[in-house]
Length: 540
Image (cartoon, rainbow, N blue to C red; front, side, top):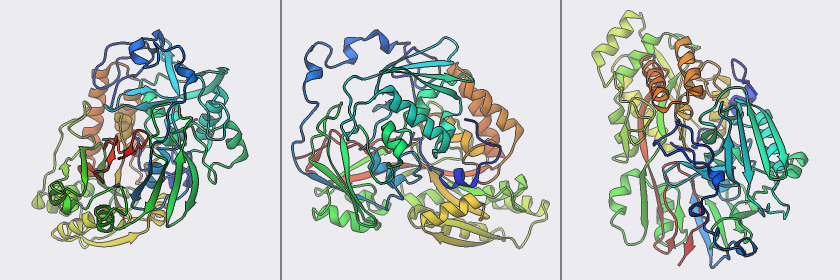
């Protein structure tokens, strides 16, 4: 499926801020391809190396139950309501926090974010990278008791390609074939060296039963193959899951998980300290230093792959002028914005990709130069400008950032009106183009394509601000099909330079991912892709 030149309203309002994007990265199985970070030895998962299979020396392993729940229901505090629980159409990060534990993908990011087998136990690629063949695990069942087959994979991908919020991730695939009951073949219209990073980084690419897809029931009754099965959803209150003792992987070791909706970060921490909750998805940045020494909780903190930014509406004057956008970039100080929003739990960065990644490119042309900003505005004959800046209270760092943005732009004569909306309204207004500017973040990125293509290509599904540049288009198109890792990085470095220099986005910082949990919780790790996985978690 190819996206239209300008995204439809439906596809734009369904956009996932993500994810990704989940979602940096070598083939976890299959035929080795020199496209990912960090460079890895060429391997073929189909060779069946016993070191990759903990049950390889046990002929009866497949006959044994995967696990038994051993105790307790974990109470997890999340900052907002899932908008829905259909993995293919939701655009809510809170929904994906829940669905990470309900669904699986063909492959998934490992602890180092390289792709590893999940529902697919191995895969092969053709020499021209136009045919990818995946072999499914045997004996995997959905929560409704039906057995996973290749038909379920094909039905899931076809639905995503036709109506999913992440259809763009399958843009290179022209056909999905169920070759036999356990074999799925993807036939591509162009090489896609990052295909694994497109289909595996987060649960927007989840595999669901073909029967449930045909019945249209996933929104009301999520059915996956993950470590926990859906029990109930009370909007504004909680989502309840119970253990799936037939889970194909390690765990679960809990009886269940209850996700409680608690928007206030301080309340979440208080409830954690008093034992009312066991885990929380965020920590007030101003309390991090204090809480790091607490005996009442454990802090998980890692450098994340997320980025936060300001986008200006290129389809409105005067923001259609790149020199005006550059003036605004010169007027802002990413370090001050990062400190206000995250204290010391963020790294200022004028590009998207964090310095912890192989794909990082050090390009910082702005800093803060008020005189340069004023000169550019004067040259563009812009004065007395009023800016409508859209933020959402469900991501409080955007509100804090907006206050700093307003103060700094006031010094160059720009009057900022901050419009704070609930996230569903924010998404609708973004899709309609009803803004001068908006501030937000992209969460869960892995491959460099996640950071740049959908946001800055003229046909990108998340290019809500209307940026168009033929040179950027060409660089991003070329990078998508380049199989040599170093050559691919050079293309993204060039694209990032031009994206930043034209101020398509004005980037601020890469935040740390900071979560907290009770000392009674074990077997949980905070991940740089922000995936919330409770499969191996225990309550002691």
